[in-house]
Length: 157
Image (cartoon, rainbow, N blue to C red):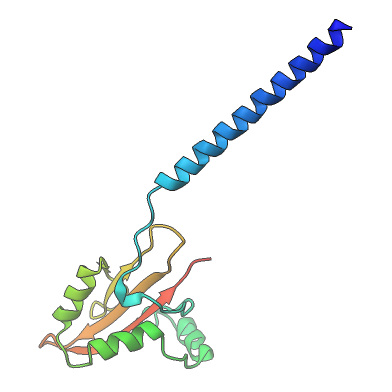
């Protein structure tokens, strides 16, 4: 009768080892979650704005096909970011002030239109998918005054 008892003891010791390994794995995952670096919060300029969907830069059409496609899309409602930008930087204000504000909020400049160098752009891309991306487009006259300003929020799902 001693043999079944030793088998039973070895089964219990094996279960104890498995339980200990599971607890150690859970503790390691909890520590990893606690110390994992958090993604930076989005800039205050885009805080609280909804996703505007996929919108493009205000570039001239590169072909007749693209021109016809834009006509078929029709007029879109204004993007929330564009409205917020125009309220903060009305048309006629200095574009350098807009560029400085965007740089302070970690937007990076880019050239949105390969066929029109008069359109300037800046974008903030989230380092992960927890926040949406933001795109800003503007034009300025020779006196550095804004003649066009728009922007949109886009979340890649």
